[in-house]
Image (cartoon, rainbow, N blue to C red; front, side):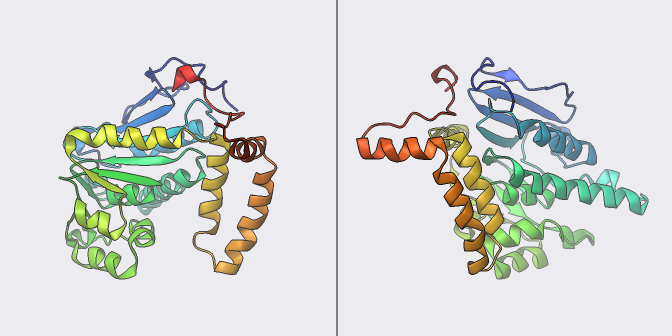
Amino acid sequence: MGAHPGSHAADRHYDRGVNHSYLAVTVDSGIARVVLNKPERRNALSLGMLGELLGLWKNLIDDRDVRVVVVSGAGPVFSAGHDLSEMIDREPEFYDELFNTCTDVMLGIQTLPQPVIAQVHGTATAAGCQLVAACDLAVADTGSRFATPGVHIGLFCSTPMVPVTRAIGRKRAMQMLLTGDFIDAGTALEWGLINGVVPPEDLKSRVDVLARRIMEFSPEVVGIGKRAFYAQVDAREDAAYDTTGPIMSSNATHPDAQEGMAAFLDKRRPQWTTTMDESAR
């Protein structure tokens, strides 16, 4: 699985043999910063951008240098959703490819062992709102707004509704979907679409605090827990226990679990077997 943690210099461009035309990706002290980098298109999730995100997920899944992934947008907005300019007068096969690729990107976030944090400013609409909802965590600045406005243009936000409904519940999701109206950052926080709201000047630092808090723990165990979360979250309670019981039993035998329990009893800080080098923190 990848190189030894901390073996790459901080603040490096992340390419792994892939040229990014739509993304700007760097790794800084264990945090992969993924910037949607088409501000002139309001960071629209075109087929090209979605393809690059999907390829990036495939590279990151085995990269032990990366402990947390942060997704943000260049320019004045996070993402305005799909690129409508490429969606006029296309064959049905194009729309199948576009929406299937988008689905793969959203579900791909769940397959990554690293937690993915959306760092949101400006607006996040339609598939952009879908991306926020699909991320494991999200922090937004006070000026952020969110909407699923497809009904306004005759294209109901049917795929964005999947993670949005799971994040905020049926009635609130239906309100967003049927009206297309924006909600502000405070409402998004109250409804559970995001985890925090901060002034614009504090957005990056607040996300970094959250990322580095997660990085204090065993990356192997965080990955186990994230996979378990998505495996059980939509199941019946009894089925959820059937899923998580064996996972927890297996986790208990992991060297980091044994070390963590011993460290707690010894009243000392645990030394994770899979932690990053101190120099990479």
